Length: 416
Image (cartoon, rainbow, N blue to C red):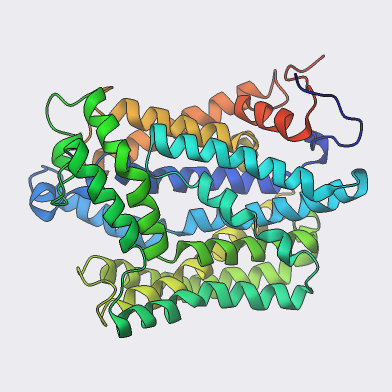
């Protein structure tokens, strides 16, 4: 039974900063556009498989466009917002609870369970488990000065350059131990170990059996990649940038940040656009760590993703200020309010559309076709989310998450 507690309450709609929900709703689109490369199998294709598609040339252009302007930028926005959310939770619960961190840790533990279930039972590309694990480190910075937080954030974002230099110098793979675990699982289950995964999951007649075999080792491959790509310090760095923004409550006083936002927009695009385009071309050249040429990927990623992420955020915020919040972006707010529900729903739809347990389109189409599908689904999520909040206080998954966090029953239906 869920206990009632008078000490704490979740944030209600009137206390929310709408711009944060708008940004979260915007990020959900970019995350889906990035994740669909995995859902569809296109991200696992070799060049011969891609050339066999009738839309090869259009697909190639869209793939480079996605690498340059989507890949990494939108999970960075989400990470930034997570850090802001932590600061809000810490400040609010500090006023109303004797042990504010216990609420934060409980919230993260529940997210960890959701993420682990999502990763193991549904889809290998889960980000929730990583957010929960890295989030447990955030309280270590709660008493740091703002200057110290910014120094740590910059150092963590830049750290992959030094980490990858170490890998090149000593010719090591930091994620190799998990790769070995994955290979052992694959030998037992029969999943091809030659790297041609797409030929297994998306072959004609594949279904439940192939999906479960695929998922058996996917968690190990996923975290081998996360470690190898230095995703952990990148995420923590963005968390800390968000923590800084949240601590200063910059999101609540946007009009006072116009000068800063204009600088972030200007320099974010000046730095981010050319370096992101360069990053995209270096990503597809086939040279990665631990080769020396692979360091170009690391360097360009470090100097392109964060500036362009900040430029996107600043552009939306400036438009929000200019229109006093009276614009079409307000329809993204409900999407952001139930971001967890929408994220998990994207997984279910991705599996249903592309895997053999559903329509089985995976392995048959490229970005030219699956991008419009993603955008159509996203617009349906906008409609669904806006309709949902006309009748309910929380998204369905958010409602469960909040009740378990605050150990109290919360009314999901609105009372008129």
